[in-house]
Amino acid sequence: MHYTASPGASAKNISTYFASLAQQVGKGRYASAHYSVDRTSIYNSLPDDELAYHCGSETYTKEALAHLGTYPNNSTVGIEMCIEKDGSIHEDTFNNTVDLTAYLIQERGFPNVFFTHKEVVGWKECPLPWIKAPEEYERFKRAVDSKLNPLEEKVVTEDEDNMNKVLDYAQWTWNELDQYIGDAYNDNIIDEWAWVEKVRKKKLTYGELLMLKVLIDERRRKKAK
Image 1 (cartoon, rainbow, N blue to C red):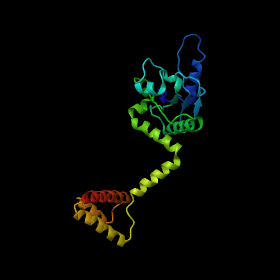
Image 2 (image 1 turned 180 degrees about the vertical axis):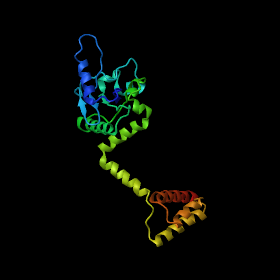
Image 3 (image 1 turned 45 degrees about the horizontal axis):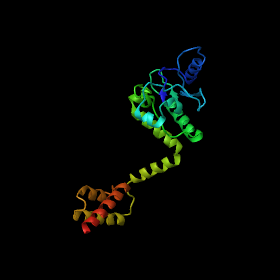
Image 4 (image 1 turned 120 degrees about the vertical axis):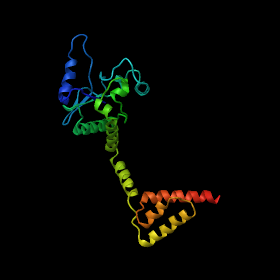
């Protein structure tokens, strides 16, 4: 994963630049990437199985050498993300890059494994917007996972939401729960009165009840030994 370091340049311009380098005569500059991405376009400059000169270096990180071999250009696909005039990666560029990488994984058979340019060589501050804000890199990887597993993501989200919902019980059930939590408090199984208060004010969530039940039952089991 790279950034273009050329504020305002489009994916087409980046692809054209790489193509111009291929026309050099004699010893020239070696630089290329397979894909360039901007707000509206994705340009494919090289076949996925053709070597691109996008992460060459005299030194590599231990992690890169362990996963990518001694010459990472041989085993990686280079993706250049275009930046805005202010140096940022636009959200549309971000989303197009998510779509591209999900396609490469799902349709072309690449592993769901990412390296930034810096993670490969260690010294290059690229892509700079993600070096400055590493949480954006993590958000990117989560977005790709979500794209690849939309149903799984939905189930997880719904489960998390349900765990945070306040219990919707009839009054007699709250009474039974009050007795259960109250007995645990009186028997010194739990030592926080706040749990009793939560039950009496009917503010206990599904997740909290599950946690309390496991805790109380386990402590009673150990106390009975």
